[in-house]
Image (cartoon, rainbow over all chains, first blue to last red; front, side):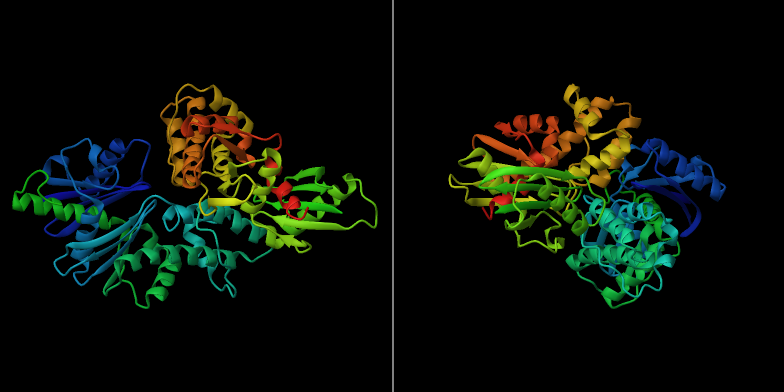
Length: 266
Length: 253
């Protein structure tokens, strides 16, 4: 049986194909202006990767902010439910999840059955999201992927006192003009993100095992700083950006098998 | 004695010289340089313009977000204290003041004697500040004056986020892609800022008239939208940028 999970996020769209509990194919693209078109394109990409055709899919679940408007038969399930399920399948021991995306950030507590018992989400402010890093990287003229490396070896990281990305950008630039070394500023930027998201974790409470997912999980500098604050190591799935899509595909399988039908789950 | 009020804001430094309780000179410096250097420069200009004798005492009162960086200040006063002083001097009597600059906004309600009764503000988030306009202008590649003009003439409104300037930036771009007219897009930007400012004003309350100052007060569309949203008359002084600097100088007069 083949199932698909499609996660249309604010910055990237992800799709995976699940077969016999294994990921057969996946695809990731930037979210375009048209979310419906994006969801179709990313699903077709994943199907191509798996060498399958749409007709073979037994069920499709969509999630993410563009989940309702996918132009193919599907069920829509919340990001919280999909992320929780995606993590639970990979790390059954997970009790706390931090999902850091392009324009939002969520902290989720889950139980041993993989049900979410509490969550908190910031999708109103760019601070503590991927966008904060993007804005700061662009203004300092560095690439997102090289931020961590370029931040290494900073003896005196600066402290970014502004929460707002717009003000933080000006703050970072004024440090740069004053001749503060780039690595000290970048270290301050990474600290700032870790500090913001850690506040979210504190709202739901931190319990081991602790899992980090989403695009920022690929930023080793941010992850290390969160681990230092959490005083524990974080587990990171092999493809952290695909977690929501993975959970969606598992829920598609679950829906199909339990025949709960429309709106019966989450 | 000549008293110089210096307001170190996020995008510029403003100064007013006050002598015998009257304005002697005023200056605005759009500065990219360090606060202390810029403040020194603007003080020189004020001294050059203000009639005063060589042995006359000169006192400096600093305000604004960067007031702590003015090393030679004799006194430092908060922004809300200074706009209250400045607005009371210009208006006389009780009123509600809204001061919106590049780095923050604040509403202050003063009593008949100029005493601050209540204030509320935001300097943590770029929404409802001039920085929101700067960001929007960069996206649209137009100047603030042009944005204001287009918004003023617009009939419709293309809405954007009122909670995050960065997210609003993406919304502006998608409004362009969706084919909204430039005027409607500009009106949407002004509406977003106005909505946030209205929230701040509501927190302190307003009765008949709102005294609106700071760089954002130069945007006529915002003044007009404030009138519509708050249902009160909005009064913008002749030099809205200089109210805090004036009030700073007056706090020693």
